[in-house]
Amino acid sequence: MLRRDSTQRSFFDQGLYDRLIGPDHFLRRLDALVDWRFVHRICRGCYARDLGRPAASPVMLFKILLLQFLYDISDRRIMEEVYLQMAFKWFCGLEPDEATPHPTTLTHFRSRLGPERFARIHNRIVELARERGLVSDRLSVVDATHVASRMNSFRVDEENPPDPDARRGGRGGGVVFVGYKAHLALDADSRIITKEEATPANVNEGRELPRVLEKNAFRVTADKAYDTNRNHNLLADWNIHSAIVLKRNRLAHPLGGRRSDRWVRDDQRKRRRIEPKVSELKRLRGLVRARYWTLPKVKIQLHLAVIAANLKRIVRLLLPGAGPPAMAAATA
Figure 1: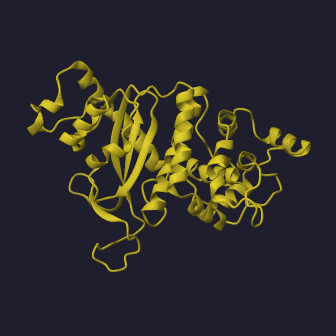
Figure 2: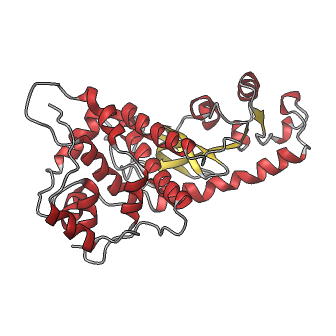
């Protein structure tokens, strides 16, 4: 049974938090920018109205997951960090002496929501950025990156592989890996990821353009893997100007348009803006390797990593001078 969230704290508890957590703390700035009640509305359909014991707050559980990806903390350690870190406790709406939920609660919460509801949460964050005038949709940069499976080794022809959804794929230079691909669309001006999708590693990224294409975009650029008649026709049908890099044997293709135009060359040079974002997702948000087994759970991991990266970017754009998230000095 889902109960209504309460944000009220006692005078003593609020005073303690005010003394320990300064107004410039990243989590204070983040909490001031986002009305988290939308998470409660999205999760409402996952719970029975009148049956069972009152469930843990979905807003609190989502914030714990968000902290996990903001600070790249493992599943085993996140509950301990929330219990020990006062800033984490305040952000999650817990009292200073309140115990955290059992770690398995997060596992059940992720399964309960599934990738679709996490995608809806991501979409609401992007809507927030648009409402604040951050996402221009002038140019969308599309790309894909590899996400290694949790397995150390894997044979595709095994009858019972540990991760049945992971597949072999290439990542350039003849390097073969086993796992998944993360497909991303980045707003070039704000550096906010507007869409993302995960697939097995053997899926060609060019075929995934329709699933990550931002329909609000005025122009789209991507590398040669996306240079197909199907993709150019799709952009033309949606009245989106294409700055996709053409393959050498297609430079004269009519679907390529006027590739010598200055705006095309400028947009193609801006493709590199997605590279720092991909690096952030891998180094700081834990996307270098899958945390979980199977494609639906990897999709959840991708959504959470992107949400964390987008929220950090939104805070920096709306509150200049806000430093990046940093762990408190006293950690176990």
